[in-house]
Length: 187
Image (cartoon, rainbow, N blue to C red; front, side, top):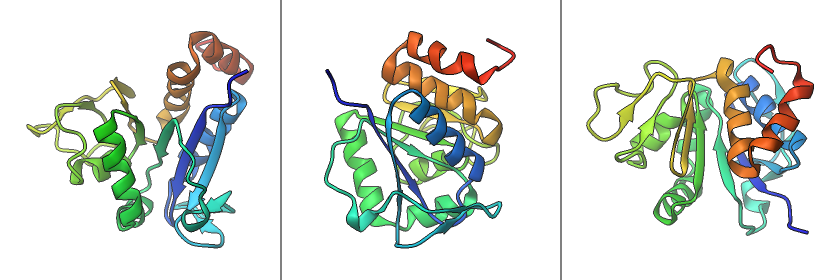
């Protein structure tokens, strides 16, 4: 029996509430082991006031291999994540190794500023990325998958983003099994 898919969701004050809650919930429903990690000890407050008690802090994070890092948006949260050099270093390593990175809303901007989107197709919250950039290929789709990079536009696309991750990590049957009980109109 294989171990559960390991998902890491880093959070900092100002994170987009819906994106963290929806992504962690959907991935857990699918059977993934989701770890929400804060940059510092104590509760973390989202951009809309949600007070979240993370599973662990970056300093306490076990040196475990993760299958995907999911970067939530929220302009202030992304700005705070970007200041964290160990996270930036991990993202660079993952890109170099071709490992999965998922980013939603303002988070693709962090990846762009770190030059981690080179020649990739990507989407983001409107205004976060330059649609005319020569470094990456901007798309206005709800979710864009380009190899090990998965990106999405914002809170309204968080469920599609999370379900796409389920499909990529666990297959289309697991996505359907996870999605049907949610009673979405497209099911």
